[in-house]
Image (cartoon, rainbow, N blue to C red; front, side, top):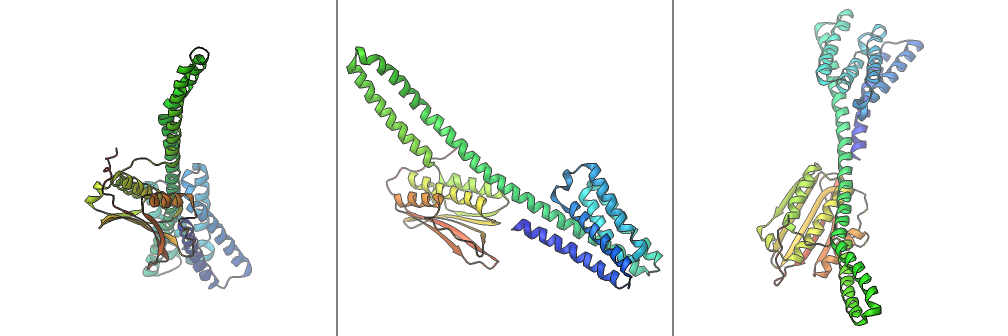
Amino acid sequence: MATRTARGILLAALVCYLGITFLNILSLSLDAYDLTRAVVCLMLVFLLQLVHSAPGISKARIRTKMLTLAAQGLLSYLPLIWFGVFWGSMAGFFAGSLLLVLPPAVGWTLYGLTALSMIIPGVLDGRGAIDTVYLAQTTALTGLVVYGLSRLTSLVDQLHKARTDLARLAVSNEQLRFSRDLHDLLGYSLSAVSLKNELIRRLIPTNPHRACEEVDEVLVISRQALADVRRVASGYREMSLSSELTSAESVLTAADVSVTVDTQDDIERLGLTTSTVLATVLREGVTNLLRHSKASRCWISARIEGDVVRLAIANDGLVLGSHLRSPHSGSGLGNLERRLEDIGGRLIAQRLPDASDTDLFRLMAETPMREHEPTTRAQG
């Protein structure tokens, strides 16, 4: 939505400038031929400006950029012969294109020369000093507006791609974790099972009693391997909430999301199970924010209030009219709700009203404090 909005503003500004020029030309009372020629030139300038304002113009070949700039320069100055100073605002488009396409040193130099060049049509048309300076100033202003809006659109597009890349990176990191945990947890167990089976096969004909003992050991190893698989599949590992808060703040800041973290020193004394579950909620909430929202602000609060621990994650990325999924509808939030229920807690996902055109989305986890649970260890 942000990308479409930025492009829409750019198109609206370009169309408005073209409309002003067209209205100025209409005041000349031209015949049908000259009016058609003016409309064709305006459309060509508009199309060339769209090319120069596109986000990928910097990656185009030098020859292509020089040809399009030359064409726009010709369409900016040649019609001055037919329409005089009423065509002057089109030179502002050309000045903006120079800034967008050329290197900064060359672009800004030619931009200034383009603005100053509009003094000549004013002098040739017999305009006064004020009108002549006004023509040069409006050319410079138009160039800045075109350049600024085009760069804004490009930056918004880059930000959108960066956030998509961050989401993909999060998925890739989780896949790497899954692969690493499988290797670390199951490599030894499966190797041991294989070796034990080979030993049992050799012992059965000669020493059945020893073979039965080895079978019992294989059963123990197999049960442990099954438990390890379940741990890896659920992603449930010992984690520190305080460490995850620091990590979440760093990731959100890198994604250009303004984040505010409100926490207490008492969070450090949370039990191991409670800390791990809340850290998992925080990780899932931040991942969903990056992948599925258009947030620019995020608030994270982790506080102990009496005998209850509350973790809240709120962001402004929920657009009005969008569908708010319940915790029961998706596997991610559903898994979090089940984990919290296992330790006597609950998960709340809700929409909160905001003064802007978007609502706030808040994900809150509540769980009781556990008195006889081992405290969490610091995570590397």
